[in-house]
Length: 217
Length: 242
Image 1 (spheres, rainbow over the protein chains, first blue to last red):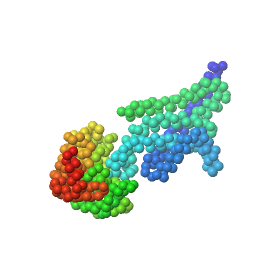
Image 2 (cartoon, one colour):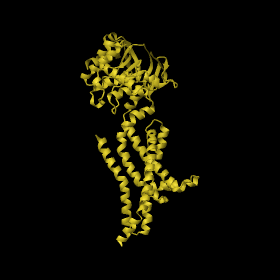
Image 3 (tube, one colour):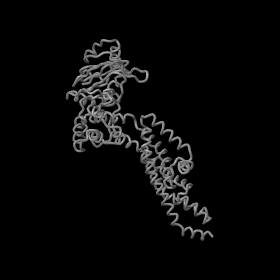
Image 4 (cartoon, rainbow over the protein chains, first blue to last red):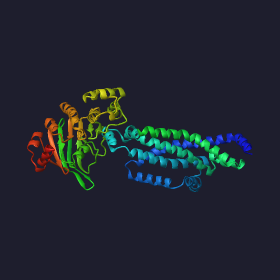
């Protein structure tokens, strides 16, 4: 029986690759948008304006204090009540962007705050604008602090894409769900699902470890 | 060149600058001293608006510094500032440190900026360190790079905030030598320092502050040898005996 299921699994393996491709798309589009949003929010959060700081603080606390599944439900089922109707794929991307940017915001703000005030002042007195100070002086130094946890966060984000299966996006986890109905060999099916996630995450785990060692010096 | 008119500043309830009136002429070398917390650092940090003021006016080269419309980039490009803790950019080489503002503020070409940077490094005696990173330099060398970084913008004024206080004693001389050379080039300078030797040698005027007020000003010899106020006399005796 096992052998039979295994050959069935091999047969429908292209279906898994489709799911993997969807997961990869969601993951990498999300990493990209989360990084950009996270940096913008993180820079604002480390800035001087108290109102923006407070607002971002509330946003971050909300995201960190609620389960991602609930956030996905809000985006997919609650937003339509306010007239924002999204298909599953864009809804998944939006939910990921909201969640990921909040975590990256904290990492970026922490990195920027680790740079001494003197570095800002050195830039200021030589006439650099605020943007130039950030781009030329602060961010390059803060990157040392930001990069290792950022890549670690990427790994978490990739794994969190599995949650959007609950709204019917045909990504890897969803493919597992669907398959297991036809091939009732759960261990085998979800081992495959797990292995495929691992294929995307592991290089990033290695990168994160490498960066952690390198930046520690 | 620099004019303070009834300048007042508070940090919360603390009155750090109390009705400061001061005129610094072009080419003048002013040494500011006083006990810690007397407001001397704050005074020079207001000149390029590193600090806001709450009342009064500061005019630098005809420009009202704390006016909202003032172009701060332009103003700051004309004023060099040297910190007690150097604040070099640790991720850049010495040469890159010195070139950064000419390239990004004055929009010079990299080649032109490098030429100026190398010239300034010669001036502070660090030609052979152009490719080094700040962490590889001694404190005295770092401070000289910081001076070169300020000079690379061809400023009209140089401000020094206790430039030798963070240095080991044997390195103070090399930094002061660079500053003395600057004086001979006619640079307008405000120097917060307790280096009496430097003050005696090159200062046109010494200004003594306490509790945010200018207590006494005078030529260095008069001030050190014959202070007019009890507080100044007390302060001088303290830095002499220490």
